[in-house]
Amino acid sequence: MGEFIHSLLVFFEGLGYWGVMLGLMIEVIPSEIVLSYAGYLVAKGEIGF
Image: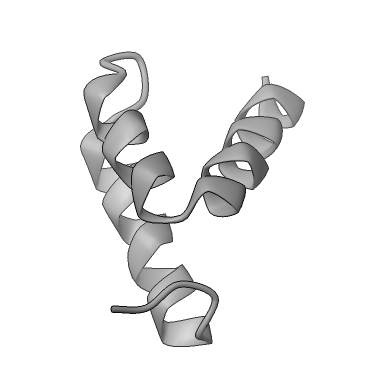
């Protein structure tokens, strides 16, 4: 299960904001996890405005 979630996070990271939107649309993954990870990526400078 952990490997599956890690692969999804890497996939979403590669897509940037589109990945965040896609992650929010998938109901299996809680939005709190997706938005927390997106905030982490913004703070790290991986994605930005």
